[in-house]
Image (spheres, rainbow, N blue to C red):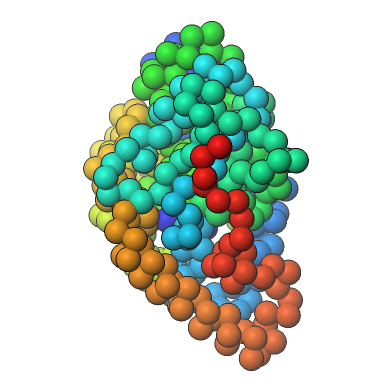
Length: 341
């Protein structure tokens, strides 16, 4: 499991189809919608600015950690841009399973129990803003939710989930898995198949994948395919990771033909994972340790590594072309607190 800067591969199945199908590809890139292109453009521009300073694997590993919510946040505020109180409460209940471990030092703050917070840009900022009316299932990663999307824009989307007549349907494995997966991204987690600890990059049938994903509904160019399918770095540098976890909630189901060895691939799983795995717990508990001293130590180490690159860029003038003050917005955020209303 790794946590780094990357847009999500997002697929979608209609709510009723997902509830009734045995193998709906809720998280497959052949779905109908993904991260809005405007967000992708913003992040790609930012990444190009960073890599203009230093594009080594070591530096990319440092950049990856910018998505982690800093230790100044004990909570991140979440709001809903629609949906009934009953549906929103069920989504919040499921999402909060990321926080129900004693080792986890970051909580998702949905507001009042039974009546989760509705988004109100004119009132207080929210770090994560959940919508139901965009195509697909997707989420920005960690702090990207607050940096690259405005308060009027959703940062996480659960297409059609607000149409559930009975919120209990969201406990069905594929729908529960979607919620946990997308909130995993909101906490800063990457897809498991893109972990440098996995061998998926060598097991994929790249010719078929490129043919498939270059066609509708995706229509991706090769750069986008690689961006969504391949590891960000080729070596275990600067990244906190566990061994490849086939049970991770962050691992996609791909059909056997996506792999050279079909169902015999080590990265192949029979169906979507629906629950947080023990290794997922280890990862988020490391990122957001309930031991505040340990969490601060990790953050300060990441900050020091980034500032070495930034300060070197200032000396060479490389930071002049950067339109975003990365140290300010990612390392010294002055956003909303996570206090309960």
